[in-house]
Image (tube, rainbow, N blue to C red; front, top):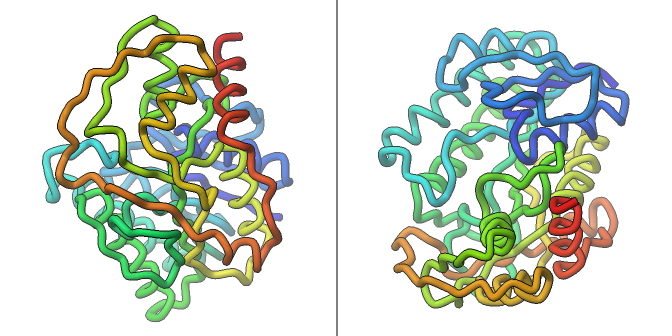
Length: 304
């Protein structure tokens, strides 16, 4: 092993990855603004506090690492953060600073957590990695731009990298709290408060949902294979509608969850399911956590 840097390592997925890398024997550093206390459980990681959009902070964090996992985004698919220009300022430009410094200091490899739910746009059937990239939101467009720049840095500077297009992860944070975002989290919070659910659109939008433990297992497989270069879909390969998720949360929690419907933003993807056969062929078939079991586990452990 060596020294790894997890950018966004105090976030939902990042904190889980910090724990996994530490368990696998990596020396782990965590770059994050740390708006909360550390959410990972490993005791060894070194915390590097900084704001991603401040270029000097991320440049100073990069040197001395064999592996960088870029798991940070300052925006979400549902959050414009001021429009395309702000997304470029918050995500794309700091990532270019990161990659430039990675080349300058001889970082061994970069893994980028991209967005399987947005980079393809809306598509029928299960979408493989070689499908056209047709994002329709600033969030997805930014992810695709970073993917292309990784390809550029590989060709121009020989920087090894892989792109991991992660579907819609759900589950608890590493500190056993619910993430602040995501459909499953929002519904569980509403169920716990005997509140109402907000549904964007008529409930027919389809997404690929994957428990965070399965995401981490797949990322670990990629980390363990230094020769692998992406892109790689990380998902369940099964689509569920928003209404199906609502019904599953009702069944799990026993809550009525009355629904308030609001118009879905025009930049929301209507249908996306990831073809995960490349992962199965390369690393072996993953025994994913079934959706009902995953939501039940999330609800039980959070309430506990």
